Length: 149
Length: 145
Image (cartoon, rainbow over all chains, first blue to last red; front, top):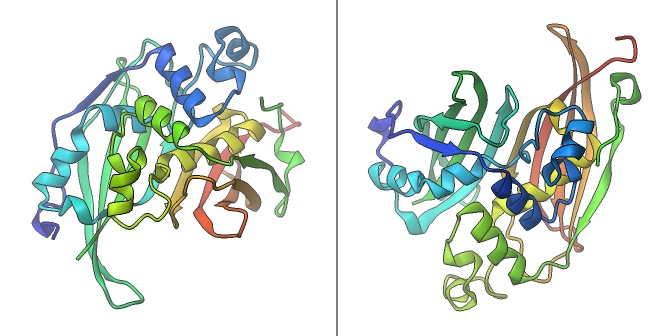
């Protein structure tokens, strides 16, 4: 079960250089052919400085950094019993190719809940606030992990 | 692509244009694994997925389905106006499913000088089985400047 004493704990920062090719690749994998994600000129015509990132792009630094398995391990969560319960993003500024974004994963909360069927679960929220290379806060990501016990 | 949209164009009850995705194939899950970096075999290996109780084998990444919802949103509301986007993963999305994303505006308000609209969103399969529920908030420009 999740170690409830670790609320507030912070982990090694996730740092990611945003590339145009990765933006296009993620959009294509979703099947989102909106030209703003694929064509710089189309993005500029619609008021962006460059190709912006799709709304769920911040899953990329999270997954490629392999940070989450380390967090799950440190919290003593049984990996086989974890479900991705919720995901939330807040957007404060644009993220463009060439930006280097970084965030410190932090355990925002751990709460025990009981499901309708009477099963106990730990609800673990991990929060990352991303800043860019100019120190501007660009986004916040919150992931809710549900560990069935 | 999303056309310019103004605060005055949207009312509580306005429907987001519906987006239909699928039927989904395992190939898309494999491509999404590579793009996102999530290589959990639950999404790419039929035998593994069956061994943990998924009758049709590999299932879609929850984040892929959230990606479909993000596509629906930013096909309607320009990406740059999106302020918040949240989902709850309610059900498993399997190979062969056709996922329909719908949404409805539930709130419209002016707050700290921003014209905010909040819309509830749902992704469900052809049988009505809900995969994702959530909401987003966008800050829109006004026709009055």
